[in-house]
Image 1: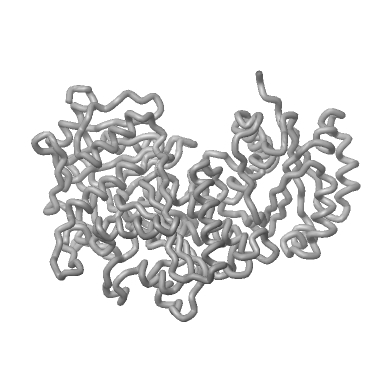
Image 2: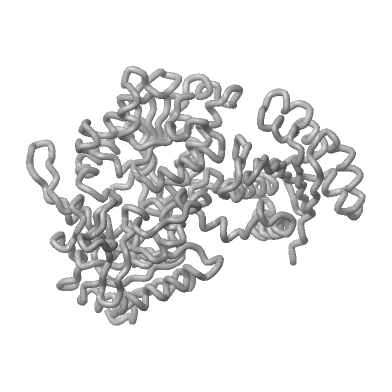
Length: 582
């Protein structure tokens, strides 16, 4: 049965709201009026100042009563509602549907918050999220939301652009408004309970560890957790312990691209006026926060990127240890298979000790489900077997995941470029193992770009082509010019692509029926130089780090993975696997 169209009703939002609401209501049919006035609705209040839209999204079972509350009561206590009420051009869009129930309106509200907060020109005033679990008619959510968005787009394409355009942005992919899985929701709730308990006990240096492989939803969980904890720290929140004892909160990530995205999110969602301070890199946090003046809560995304030894920019010995000395509670998300350099190395014994210690305190959590790769079980198993066991199996048939091996790197690039330029198909980019020279901030002795060169292809490494001013705040993969570059683990880690085109360089070979790693072919000195361990011994961990590099690259594609291998034997083995001959 075809789902009916939503009812969209727009009215000026000011002191004359009630008169305008009633007068214009008669332009609707009697049936539609009934759904607007007396049934659950979702609403958007917005105002445009210059190029920026300020927005509040809500849901209610009685729109006139809720609007009265906003215009007459909320303005006394909330500056955001006062700003919307006082603005000369504020508008209210009311959305109704014949199938709306309480749970469905909450999900539509949350989805609108997710999409609208992911645009460059919006600021959202909402303070909480309300994603719902299973309920009657939840199977209609996608279609009803699509119909609503398309109708809104007809009304105002600047505020409501093409959905696919929004979904490609890093802000959307890292948004705290994602509908979490039951696994993520359970872990988030357990962490909030543990944080509350630890703060109330006035404990310090407490670590909560979340473990999960690439694509298990770690960053979305961290973004959602940070947002919820920020809201709970406000006065009169539903959690008086965090409101009183958890006000000083920080989010740390040792990754330039992720840092950029998190700062944008905090700024857009108005979580803090000092977003450049509360979202920081670990070294900056350690240098600016004294152990004597501990902060309340620190969340660390991509904790596997923390340094476990000193270097010129960092005089300490261990990022995590120094952060724990400066915080009451630390929540860190970790994936041992994404450690990429010797300065991040943690031995298996040290890692297991972390797991054991946190587990004893009920502070260890594990994300099991694979959420990024939109493939069947056989395809995911093929990728994991190649990475984890270094074996190549016949490539399975998969209707939904575009997995292809190429014998020619230029042909692969052209196929990927076509996908990338196909409007609405998502971001597709070329990425490679670090097997070609590159020095950040410098050009080659010939004055040229550092380049990735194969038999057929010659393209610049990432972060070298000129960037338009409007693109600078975007993540690397979102910037238009990057379709003409090759990304590395250092720009793509933590992000996903629609199709990932991976050039496997000469550091990865195929010998005697097995994938092997050749550190002499890698140009990543952070992976190939030996690591000094506690007993003073110099350890060669290049095999482990190069394997992790391959893991990061091969797990970026949501809907597809294109592979070209420089090593002839590896390329032949992969081509045979594609034909089912291996």
